[in-house]
Amino acid sequence: MMENAKRNTVWDTMDNLRQYLPVAVLLVLVIISSLLSKNFLTVQNIFNLLRQNAGTVIVSMGMLLVILTGGIDLSVGSVAAFSSVLFATLLDNRQAAALPLPLALLLTLLGSLAFGALCGYLVAYKKMAAFVVTLAAMTAARGVAYMISHAKTIPITNEVVNVFSKGNVLKVPYSVILALLIFLCVAFVLRFTSYGRFVQAIGSNENAVRLSGIRTSMFVLSVYVVSSLLCTFGGIVESRTGVGDARVCEGLELDAIAACVIGGASLSGGKGTALNTLMGVLILGLIGNIMALKKVAPYPQQVIKGVIIIAAVLLQGKRNKD
Image 1 (cartoon, helix red, strand yellow):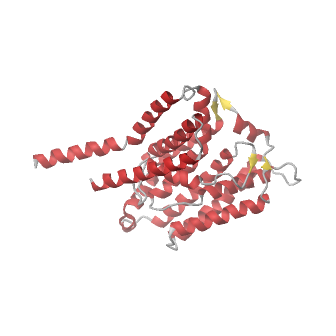
Image 2 (image 1 turned 90 degrees about the vertical axis):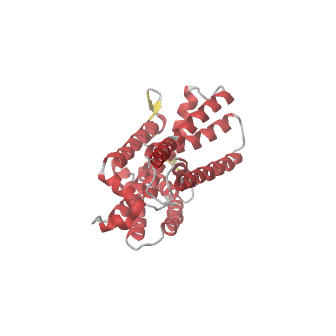
Image 3 (image 1 turned 60 degrees about the vertical axis):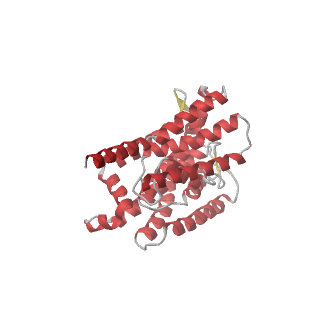
C-alpha cells in the first residue's frame, strides 16, 4: 500500500507539472526567439505581437467555454467577420441612417447573439452535432457578411472606434487591455463561480450533472451565446485597419481551437483553463512573429502550427493514459 501511495503521489506531481507545460513552452520560445532576432524583445515588437493576437485571445476564451462542455464552435471566425461588417455599416456616416456608437454596438451584439442562440438551441435542445450546426453557421454568417458589405470594405469613420483601434495607455494598446479584461473575467468565472464548475462538469459527465438536478441544456446553450458575443469584440478588434471587411478572421476558428488544444484543453470536454489557453494563443502568435522577423514565407508557419497541434494532442493522450 505504501508503494501504491508513493506511485500515486508521483503521478499527481507529474500531472500538476504538466498543467504548467504551456507556460514553460512559451518561456522557452521567448528565449529562442530573443537569440534568433535582436528585434524580438523590443517594446514595439512585443506590443505589435500582443495587438495582433488580441482578437484571437478574445475569441479563444469563448471557444474554451464551448470546448469545456464537449462541444466545438466552427462559426467564430465568420461571426466575427459578420460583426465587423455590421458594426461598420451601422456606423457609416455616409448614410443618412448612421447610428450612434452605443446603439450600433448593441445591435451588433444582438446580431451575433442570434447566431450563438440558434447554434446553442440546436445543440442543447435538439441534440444535433455541434460540428454540423456550427459548420452551417460558419457558412451562413460569412455569406450574410458578404451580402451586407456587397463584398466591399466599409470604412469605420467613428472617431471613438478609431482611437480605440490605434490608441494606447502607457503604450499598451486598448485592444490588448480589452483582451486582458475578458481573459480575467473568464478565468474568474471558471475558477470561482458555480457556473464555471457546472460548465466543466458537463464536459466531464453530462448525465451525472443532469441526474443531480442541473438543467444542463441551459448551460450548453449559454456557452454558445457567450462565444458569439465575444466574437463581436473579436471582430471589431480584428478590424485594425479601420474598416469592416467580410474577409477578416478567415481561419480564426482554427487558431482558437488550436490555442485551446495547445493549452491542454480536452476536445472531449471537462479539461482546460483560461491561463493555458492564453499561453496557447501567445505560442502560436510568437511562432508567426519570429518567422516574420526572420522573413520566412507564411506557408511554413501553417506546417509548424499543424505539428504543434498534433504534438499537443499526443501529449494529452499520454496524460490521459497515465
